[in-house]
Length: 374
Image (cartoon, rainbow, N blue to C red):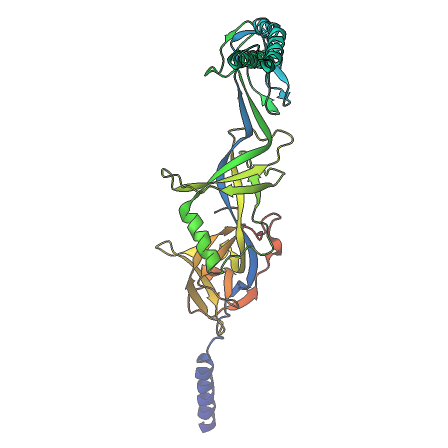
């Protein structure tokens, strides 16, 4: 009976011991991370602009007369020196013939007076009067010849001519305010882009601080994005930055020159110029999905520290580059930023960090080493 009691007691103690055995601890949640590293990035900015002709010439008559013939096709390309209009030359030809008719007699008179002057047969005054009359007539001949040439209105530049404002038979006057036609040279073509003075000063400060440089890149090369979002195939050149500020917009004008052999760019088109700012040799880029916002809208990211715990960091963001953010503050090389699994962890939690696999990205979503938006 005693042995039976001892056996029951052992069984009871054993049962209590088993019931007090603790369950195994839960597994740490798994998160995907990217390790921060500095890299060299070419920074650019998009600025809106408008195209304008490389050269422009407004055609006006230089003499009064009747338009006999228009000698060009509206909207066509014309060459420098090509005749555009013919003004009735008859009155100008008559004026030239009249001036030329008196030249021989005046020249003979001057020659006779010159010989007679040696023998004192004529006075010096008579010779001077005859010589002056000859020079005046020669000047009148030159003027009549110039006016006759002006009856042939020619193009001063090569380019594309627009609509004519007059037809055959129209009466025109010299240097009239109304143009006969306008010629614009479109190859090459200008693109004028405003840049705010605050942006200009910001870039100068970054260069002075050494955070941007122009080493290894031609900052004068410019790309162009057309109004439908397509990229213009030819690169342009930054020609100059205006030296005066527009007081109404607080901006300066950047003028660029683009080749336009196929006439794709027309005057007055709105475009976006991709201007190179410089190279950031110490840039930090992280995927945009790794950045969230707090209740105040401040950007932040979660990182995994050396102890495997989650920490929260407030970030300073410069701009988006492709599908990444350029980080200006809050991260350092070696930090492991959580890109996947952020919703299932909180600051202070212990996690298992695995490298982020970006091989599943869709083609074309990879960040480029140059900004395409500002």
